[in-house]
Length: 230
Image (cartoon, rainbow, N blue to C red; front, top):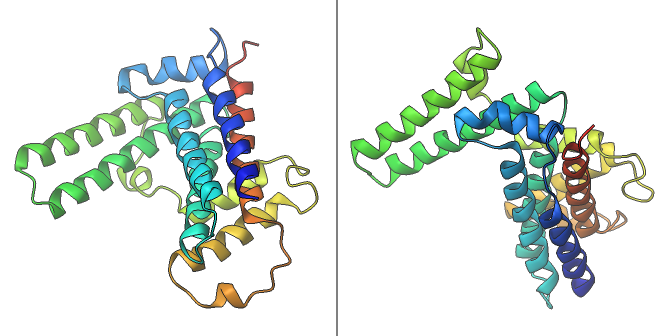
């Protein structure tokens, strides 16, 4: 199973690397709209999917799967691949707003790190300035957007649930991704947080690595579609 997962992750990584944004495509339009902000829909999605595939490749190379570490790697893969799918949902302006919101939250987390590490005021001010720039860029797309709403990005569990709904119904070859993706992620989350109930659950669901690969595959397919000119 491990070698199969690593091989599949590698194939998806090669597909991802071959994607080029065609002029006039939705991805190119989104990136043009985002250019002044310094962000890119394509670049953000590629980073997220690469993270997912990196985790899956490592999980596939784990010959003796560790009871807690192995599921945690796959959970991270589902989380990041789901976030990529979530970013690419809806019309172009929605994709841009979500990309800006994701970048904004990135600066929120960076600010928290800087505070915890007792960085100087200059570094904290730079993070605050970058956050303000991204909020201004979002308000240019959506006048009147409130900072509190922009700050409150959807939770990982909500985004994972949305990813399941965005996937083709047959993406898992049987189980409905609208329910299976979130169910698997919740079970993996129990392992990631050292909970005992997950091990007691019957193992009658499809392999969680296959679910993660399917979510990553859906994200790659979506980016391919967005990158083709109409």
